[in-house]
Length: 331
Ligand SMILES: Cc1cc2nc3c(=O)[nH]c(=O)nc-3n(C[C@H](O)[C@H](O)[C@H](O)COP(=O)(O)OP(=O)(O)OC[C@H]3O[C@@H](n4cnc5c(N)ncnc54)[C@H](O)[C@@H]3O)c2cc1C
Image (tube, rainbow, N blue to C red; front, side, top):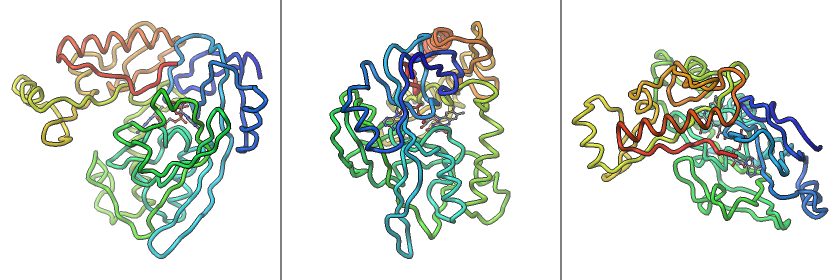
Protein backbone atom coordinates (compact mmCIF):
# COMPACT_ATOMS: atom_id res chain seq x y z
CA UNK A 1 0.00 0.00 0.00
CA UNK A 2 1.29 3.46 -0.87
CA UNK A 3 1.20 6.62 1.28
CA UNK A 4 0.27 4.48 4.29
CA UNK A 5 -0.62 6.05 7.68
CA UNK A 6 1.66 4.80 10.49
CA UNK A 7 -0.12 6.33 13.48
CA UNK A 8 -1.31 2.87 14.54
CA UNK A 9 2.17 1.42 14.00
CA UNK A 10 4.18 3.61 16.40
CA UNK A 11 3.42 3.83 20.12
CA UNK A 12 4.34 7.53 20.24
CA UNK A 13 1.14 7.90 18.19
CA UNK A 14 2.90 10.19 15.71
CA UNK A 15 0.96 11.19 12.63
CA UNK A 16 3.49 9.96 10.05
CA UNK A 17 3.12 8.19 6.70
CA UNK A 18 5.18 5.66 4.76
CA UNK A 19 5.67 5.92 1.00
CA UNK A 20 5.03 2.14 0.89
CA UNK A 21 3.87 -0.42 3.48
CA UNK A 22 4.19 -4.18 2.94
CA UNK A 23 3.05 -7.09 5.12
CA UNK A 24 3.64 -10.81 4.66
CA UNK A 25 2.31 -13.93 6.39
CA UNK A 26 5.00 -16.51 5.51
CA UNK A 27 8.68 -16.82 4.59
CA UNK A 28 7.58 -17.63 1.03
CA UNK A 29 5.62 -14.37 0.77
CA UNK A 30 8.63 -12.43 2.07
CA UNK A 31 10.86 -14.21 -0.48
CA UNK A 32 8.44 -13.19 -3.22
CA UNK A 33 8.52 -9.53 -2.10
CA UNK A 34 12.33 -9.69 -2.25
CA UNK A 35 12.58 -11.46 -5.61
CA UNK A 36 9.98 -9.27 -7.33
CA UNK A 37 11.87 -6.11 -6.27
CA UNK A 38 8.97 -4.70 -4.24
CA UNK A 39 11.17 -3.70 -1.27
CA UNK A 40 12.39 -0.36 -2.51
CA UNK A 41 15.16 1.58 -0.72
CA UNK A 42 15.28 2.88 1.89
CA UNK A 43 13.46 0.20 3.84
CA UNK A 44 12.82 -0.62 7.48
CA UNK A 45 11.33 -3.71 9.09
CA UNK A 46 9.15 -2.79 12.03
CA UNK A 47 7.36 -4.78 14.71
CA UNK A 48 4.83 -2.98 16.89
CA UNK A 49 6.70 0.35 16.59
CA UNK A 50 7.14 0.55 20.37
CA UNK A 51 10.83 1.40 20.25
CA UNK A 52 10.82 3.72 17.25
CA UNK A 53 10.79 7.47 16.84
CA UNK A 54 9.85 8.66 13.36
CA UNK A 55 11.59 12.02 13.13
CA UNK A 56 9.96 13.17 9.85
CA UNK A 57 6.34 13.29 8.78
CA UNK A 58 6.95 10.93 5.86
CA UNK A 59 9.15 7.84 5.68
CA UNK A 60 10.31 7.96 2.05
CA UNK A 61 10.78 4.22 1.47
CA UNK A 62 9.27 0.81 2.31
CA UNK A 63 8.08 -0.20 5.75
CA UNK A 64 7.89 -3.99 6.17
CA UNK A 65 5.88 -5.78 8.82
CA UNK A 66 5.68 -9.48 9.62
CA UNK A 67 2.35 -11.27 10.11
CA UNK A 68 4.11 -14.62 10.64
CA UNK A 69 2.39 -15.62 13.87
CA UNK A 70 1.92 -18.69 16.02
CA UNK A 71 3.70 -20.94 18.47
CA UNK A 72 4.71 -24.57 17.83
CA UNK A 73 6.44 -27.08 20.10
CA UNK A 74 9.66 -28.44 18.57
CA UNK A 75 10.72 -30.75 21.42
CA UNK A 76 10.18 -31.35 25.11
CA UNK A 77 11.33 -33.47 28.02
CA UNK A 78 10.53 -33.58 31.74
CA UNK A 79 12.52 -30.43 32.50
CA UNK A 80 11.93 -28.12 29.56
CA UNK A 81 10.01 -27.34 26.40
CA UNK A 82 11.35 -25.88 23.15
CA UNK A 83 9.17 -23.56 21.06
CA UNK A 84 9.33 -22.00 17.60
CA UNK A 85 7.46 -18.69 17.48
CA UNK A 86 6.57 -16.50 14.48
CA UNK A 87 8.31 -13.11 14.59
CA UNK A 88 5.02 -11.25 14.11
CA UNK A 89 3.44 -12.79 17.22
CA UNK A 90 2.59 -10.13 19.81
CA UNK A 91 5.16 -10.59 22.59
CA UNK A 92 2.70 -10.44 25.46
CA UNK A 93 0.35 -12.95 23.75
CA UNK A 94 3.33 -15.32 23.69
CA UNK A 95 4.08 -14.65 27.38
CA UNK A 96 0.42 -15.16 28.33
CA UNK A 97 0.29 -18.51 26.53
CA UNK A 98 3.51 -19.67 28.21
CA UNK A 99 2.11 -18.71 31.61
CA UNK A 100 -1.22 -20.42 30.92
CA UNK A 101 0.70 -23.62 30.16
CA UNK A 102 2.85 -23.26 33.29
CA UNK A 103 6.07 -22.83 31.25
CA UNK A 104 8.53 -20.68 33.16
CA UNK A 105 11.09 -18.17 31.89
CA UNK A 106 9.27 -15.19 30.36
CA UNK A 107 6.77 -14.19 33.08
CA UNK A 108 9.04 -11.33 34.28
CA UNK A 109 8.83 -9.94 30.74
CA UNK A 110 5.01 -9.66 30.87
CA UNK A 111 3.30 -6.67 29.26
CA UNK A 112 6.35 -5.45 27.32
CA UNK A 113 4.86 -4.02 24.11
CA UNK A 114 5.93 -5.20 20.69
CA UNK A 115 6.44 -8.42 18.80
CA UNK A 116 8.58 -11.53 19.16
CA UNK A 117 11.01 -10.70 16.31
CA UNK A 118 11.83 -7.32 17.80
CA UNK A 119 12.20 -8.83 21.28
CA UNK A 120 15.06 -10.90 19.85
CA UNK A 121 16.61 -7.85 18.13
CA UNK A 122 16.35 -5.71 21.25
CA UNK A 123 17.16 -8.37 23.85
CA UNK A 124 14.28 -6.95 25.88
CA UNK A 125 14.66 -7.08 29.61
CA UNK A 126 12.76 -6.42 32.82
CA UNK A 127 12.89 -7.49 36.47
CA UNK A 128 16.25 -9.25 36.19
CA UNK A 129 15.40 -11.34 33.09
CA UNK A 130 16.42 -10.75 29.48
CA UNK A 131 15.13 -12.35 26.27
CA UNK A 132 18.59 -13.87 25.72
CA UNK A 133 18.09 -16.03 28.83
CA UNK A 134 15.43 -18.08 27.01
CA UNK A 135 16.25 -17.64 23.29
CA UNK A 136 18.06 -20.61 21.71
CA UNK A 137 18.11 -19.66 18.01
CA UNK A 138 16.89 -17.10 15.45
CA UNK A 139 15.70 -17.88 11.92
CA UNK A 140 16.33 -15.12 9.37
CA UNK A 141 16.00 -14.22 5.74
CA UNK A 142 18.31 -11.58 4.28
CA UNK A 143 17.61 -9.05 1.53
CA UNK A 144 19.12 -11.42 -1.06
CA UNK A 145 16.63 -14.09 -0.01
CA UNK A 146 19.13 -16.33 1.87
CA UNK A 147 17.79 -18.17 4.89
CA UNK A 148 20.09 -18.54 7.90
CA UNK A 149 19.60 -19.76 11.46
CA UNK A 150 21.75 -18.17 14.17
CA UNK A 151 22.29 -20.06 17.44
CA UNK A 152 21.82 -17.69 20.41
CA UNK A 153 25.56 -17.82 21.20
CA UNK A 154 26.24 -16.21 17.78
CA UNK A 155 23.78 -13.34 18.36
CA UNK A 156 26.16 -11.04 20.30
CA UNK A 157 23.70 -10.54 23.13
CA UNK A 158 24.40 -7.91 25.79
CA UNK A 159 22.32 -5.28 27.63
CA UNK A 160 19.71 -4.18 24.99
CA UNK A 161 22.17 -5.24 22.29
CA UNK A 162 22.37 -7.95 19.64
CA UNK A 163 24.06 -8.72 16.36
CA UNK A 164 20.81 -7.69 14.60
CA UNK A 165 21.21 -4.08 15.77
CA UNK A 166 24.57 -3.69 14.02
CA UNK A 167 24.39 -1.56 10.85
CA UNK A 168 25.94 -4.30 8.68
CA UNK A 169 23.12 -6.69 9.74
CA UNK A 170 20.25 -4.30 8.98
CA UNK A 171 18.98 -6.05 5.82
CA UNK A 172 18.29 -9.17 7.92
CA UNK A 173 14.68 -10.03 8.64
CA UNK A 174 13.82 -12.28 11.56
CA UNK A 175 11.12 -14.82 10.67
CA UNK A 176 11.03 -17.09 13.74
CA UNK A 177 12.54 -17.18 17.22
CA UNK A 178 13.27 -20.38 19.16
CA UNK A 179 12.92 -20.49 22.95
CA UNK A 180 13.61 -23.00 25.72
CA UNK A 181 11.38 -22.65 28.78
CA UNK A 182 11.42 -24.56 32.06
CA UNK A 183 8.79 -26.86 33.37
CA UNK A 184 10.25 -26.78 36.89
CA UNK A 185 10.15 -23.12 37.91
CA UNK A 186 13.25 -21.09 38.80
CA UNK A 187 11.96 -17.66 39.70
CA UNK A 188 13.79 -14.34 39.59
CA UNK A 189 12.16 -12.19 42.25
CA UNK A 190 15.01 -10.06 43.57
CA UNK A 191 14.59 -7.12 41.24
CA UNK A 192 12.39 -4.08 41.61
CA UNK A 193 9.46 -4.50 43.96
CA UNK A 194 8.55 -7.95 42.65
CA UNK A 195 8.90 -10.00 45.84
CA UNK A 196 7.01 -7.32 47.76
CA UNK A 197 4.23 -7.28 45.15
CA UNK A 198 3.73 -11.01 45.68
CA UNK A 199 2.73 -10.14 49.23
CA UNK A 200 4.21 -13.26 50.82
CA UNK A 201 2.41 -15.73 48.50
CA UNK A 202 4.42 -18.69 47.19
CA UNK A 203 5.32 -17.74 43.61
CA UNK A 204 3.75 -19.40 40.57
CA UNK A 205 4.27 -18.27 36.98
CA UNK A 206 0.73 -16.86 36.96
CA UNK A 207 1.23 -14.93 40.21
CA UNK A 208 4.55 -13.50 39.02
CA UNK A 209 2.93 -12.38 35.75
CA UNK A 210 0.08 -10.71 37.67
CA UNK A 211 2.55 -8.94 39.98
CA UNK A 212 4.67 -7.71 37.06
CA UNK A 213 1.56 -6.41 35.28
CA UNK A 214 0.41 -4.61 38.43
CA UNK A 215 3.76 -2.91 38.97
CA UNK A 216 4.13 -1.95 35.31
CA UNK A 217 0.62 -0.48 35.12
CA UNK A 218 1.31 1.64 38.21
CA UNK A 219 4.55 3.05 36.78
CA UNK A 220 4.35 3.23 33.01
CA UNK A 221 1.91 5.10 30.78
CA UNK A 222 -0.29 2.99 28.50
CA UNK A 223 0.67 4.00 24.92
CA UNK A 224 -3.01 3.82 23.96
CA UNK A 225 -3.66 6.70 26.36
CA UNK A 226 -0.36 8.62 26.29
CA UNK A 227 2.03 8.07 23.39
CA UNK A 228 5.48 6.84 24.48
CA UNK A 229 8.16 4.28 23.71
CA UNK A 230 8.96 3.10 27.24
CA UNK A 231 12.45 3.89 28.50
CA UNK A 232 13.74 6.52 26.12
CA UNK A 233 17.39 6.31 27.24
CA UNK A 234 19.66 3.42 28.17
CA UNK A 235 21.08 3.30 31.66
CA UNK A 236 24.68 4.51 31.28
CA UNK A 237 27.54 2.26 32.37
CA UNK A 238 30.39 4.32 33.81
CA UNK A 239 33.91 3.61 35.16
CA UNK A 240 33.90 2.82 38.89
CA UNK A 241 36.34 5.67 39.60
CA UNK A 242 33.88 8.17 38.07
CA UNK A 243 31.05 6.59 40.06
CA UNK A 244 32.99 7.00 43.33
CA UNK A 245 33.48 10.71 42.56
CA UNK A 246 29.75 11.12 41.89
CA UNK A 247 28.90 9.27 45.10
CA UNK A 248 30.83 11.83 47.15
CA UNK A 249 28.63 14.58 45.72
CA UNK A 250 25.40 12.51 45.65
CA UNK A 251 25.57 9.89 48.43
CA UNK A 252 22.12 8.51 47.54
CA UNK A 253 22.95 7.76 43.89
CA UNK A 254 21.35 4.41 42.96
CA UNK A 255 23.54 1.94 41.05
CA UNK A 256 24.08 -1.67 39.99
CA UNK A 257 27.55 -3.18 39.85
CA UNK A 258 28.32 -4.49 36.36
CA UNK A 259 31.75 -5.85 37.28
CA UNK A 260 34.83 -4.74 39.25
CA UNK A 261 35.45 -1.78 36.96
CA UNK A 262 32.02 -0.72 35.74
CA UNK A 263 28.85 0.56 37.38
CA UNK A 264 25.38 1.06 35.83
CA UNK A 265 23.50 4.17 36.92
CA UNK A 266 19.73 4.59 36.30
CA UNK A 267 19.24 7.22 33.57
CA UNK A 268 15.83 8.06 35.10
CA UNK A 269 17.51 9.13 38.36
CA UNK A 270 20.01 11.35 36.51
CA UNK A 271 17.18 13.00 34.53
CA UNK A 272 15.10 13.51 37.67
CA UNK A 273 18.05 15.16 39.44
CA UNK A 274 18.20 17.65 36.56
CA UNK A 275 14.62 18.67 37.38
CA UNK A 276 13.00 17.27 34.22
CA UNK A 277 10.39 14.95 35.78
CA UNK A 278 6.91 16.13 34.69
CA UNK A 279 8.33 19.03 32.63
CA UNK A 280 7.20 19.78 29.05
CA UNK A 281 8.84 21.34 26.06
CA UNK A 282 5.95 22.18 23.75
CA UNK A 283 3.73 19.11 23.25
CA UNK A 284 6.52 16.70 24.32
CA UNK A 285 6.99 15.94 28.01
CA UNK A 286 8.97 13.93 30.56
CA UNK A 287 6.46 11.55 32.21
CA UNK A 288 5.44 12.71 35.66
CA UNK A 289 5.82 9.27 37.33
CA UNK A 290 9.02 8.09 35.61
CA UNK A 291 11.62 10.49 34.22
CA UNK A 292 13.06 7.88 31.86
CA UNK A 293 9.90 7.99 29.73
CA UNK A 294 9.28 10.77 27.21
CA UNK A 295 5.65 11.20 26.17
CA UNK A 296 3.61 12.73 23.40
CA UNK A 297 1.44 14.98 25.55
CA UNK A 298 -0.70 16.19 22.64
CA UNK A 299 -0.09 16.42 18.93
CA UNK A 300 3.70 16.24 19.18
CA UNK A 301 5.76 15.63 16.05
CA UNK A 302 8.89 13.51 15.95
CA UNK A 303 10.89 16.76 15.86
CA UNK A 304 9.25 17.88 19.15
CA UNK A 305 10.31 14.63 20.86
CA UNK A 306 13.85 14.91 19.45
CA UNK A 307 14.06 18.50 20.71
CA UNK A 308 13.10 17.40 24.24
CA UNK A 309 15.47 14.41 24.15
CA UNK A 310 18.41 16.63 23.15
CA UNK A 311 17.60 19.11 25.94
CA UNK A 312 17.45 16.27 28.51
CA UNK A 313 20.77 14.82 27.28
CA UNK A 314 22.42 18.27 27.48
CA UNK A 315 21.25 18.77 31.10
CA UNK A 316 22.58 15.36 32.19
CA UNK A 317 25.91 16.03 30.45
CA UNK A 318 26.20 19.44 32.10
CA UNK A 319 25.31 18.28 35.62
CA UNK A 320 26.97 14.84 35.71
CA UNK A 321 29.37 14.79 32.73
CA UNK A 322 27.61 11.61 31.55
CA UNK A 323 26.35 11.05 27.99
CA UNK A 324 23.03 9.23 28.06
CA UNK A 325 22.19 7.49 24.79
CA UNK A 326 18.71 6.81 23.39
CA UNK A 327 17.41 3.26 23.62
CA UNK A 328 14.75 4.29 21.09
CA UNK A 329 15.69 4.01 17.42
CA UNK A 330 15.49 7.32 15.54
CA UNK A 331 14.10 6.73 12.03
C1 LIG B 1 5.16 1.34 27.59
C2 LIG B 1 6.42 0.66 27.13
C3 LIG B 1 7.14 -0.11 28.02
C4 LIG B 1 8.30 -0.77 27.59
N1 LIG B 1 8.99 -1.54 28.49
C5 LIG B 1 10.12 -2.19 28.11
C6 LIG B 1 10.84 -3.02 29.02
O1 LIG B 1 10.44 -3.20 30.17
N2 LIG B 1 11.96 -3.62 28.59
C7 LIG B 1 12.42 -3.48 27.30
O2 LIG B 1 13.46 -4.09 26.96
N3 LIG B 1 11.76 -2.71 26.40
C8 LIG B 1 10.62 -2.07 26.78
N4 LIG B 1 9.95 -1.26 25.87
C9 LIG B 1 10.50 -1.08 24.52
C10 LIG B 1 9.87 -2.00 23.44
O3 LIG B 1 8.67 -2.57 23.89
C11 LIG B 1 10.83 -3.12 23.03
O4 LIG B 1 12.03 -2.58 22.51
C12 LIG B 1 10.20 -4.05 21.96
O5 LIG B 1 10.99 -5.18 21.78
C13 LIG B 1 9.99 -3.36 20.63
O6 LIG B 1 9.17 -4.22 19.88
P1 LIG B 1 8.42 -3.76 18.58
O7 LIG B 1 7.82 -4.98 17.98
O8 LIG B 1 7.50 -2.66 18.88
O9 LIG B 1 9.64 -3.30 17.67
P2 LIG B 1 9.87 -1.95 16.84
O10 LIG B 1 9.92 -0.80 17.78
O11 LIG B 1 8.90 -1.87 15.72
O12 LIG B 1 11.32 -2.24 16.26
C14 LIG B 1 12.43 -2.34 17.12
C15 LIG B 1 13.64 -2.82 16.34
O13 LIG B 1 13.45 -4.17 15.91
C16 LIG B 1 13.59 -4.26 14.49
N5 LIG B 1 12.67 -5.31 14.02
C17 LIG B 1 11.37 -5.45 14.37
N6 LIG B 1 10.87 -6.58 13.85
C18 LIG B 1 11.88 -7.17 13.15
C19 LIG B 1 12.00 -8.37 12.37
N7 LIG B 1 10.99 -9.24 12.23
N8 LIG B 1 13.18 -8.63 11.77
C20 LIG B 1 14.23 -7.78 11.91
N9 LIG B 1 14.19 -6.64 12.65
C21 LIG B 1 13.02 -6.34 13.26
C22 LIG B 1 13.30 -2.87 13.97
O14 LIG B 1 13.89 -2.64 12.71
C23 LIG B 1 13.90 -2.02 15.07
O15 LIG B 1 15.30 -1.95 14.88
C24 LIG B 1 8.76 -0.62 26.26
C25 LIG B 1 8.02 0.18 25.36
C26 LIG B 1 6.86 0.81 25.78
C27 LIG B 1 6.08 1.62 24.80
